Length: 166
Image 1 (cartoon, rainbow, N blue to C red):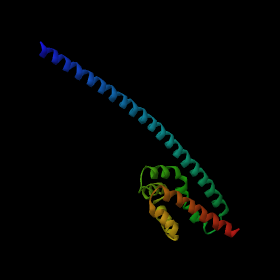
Image 2 (cartoon, rainbow, N blue to C red; image 1 turned 90 degrees about the horizontal axis):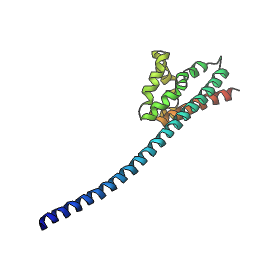
Image 3 (cartoon, rainbow, N blue to C red; image 1 turned 120 degrees about the horizontal axis):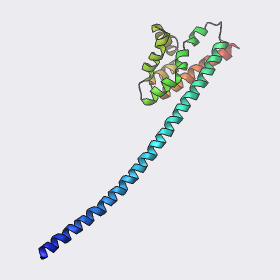
């Protein structure tokens, strides 16, 4: 009889222990779920922000390129500046791809230039990228920062040439 009572007490004690342990685990799981939901909401907000930034930078760059193109009409540099169009027109696409990982700038840019013809990309590299060492560094970085810096430096370079001629 005492053995049966001891077994019952032992069973009740282990049951209470596991019940309390499961309550603590359940609380921990709820806290982790809340944190995961919060992180997911923050991630979504940051993604939206980055998309807005990419589109606004892209629109701004397109306007600047259009201004440079209109003022350079009839000059020898006009054809060279025309080579920037696929890069600037696909700013958002290239930005998003570069945002996803390093080493994607060259491949995405080549795809964007493919609509202009097979030689357009090679001409862009030869006439635009290889002419300036700082532009080559930005291009060589092959990442998002390099892309943003590349576009900005190209626009500054050609708008400075426009200002010099005025």
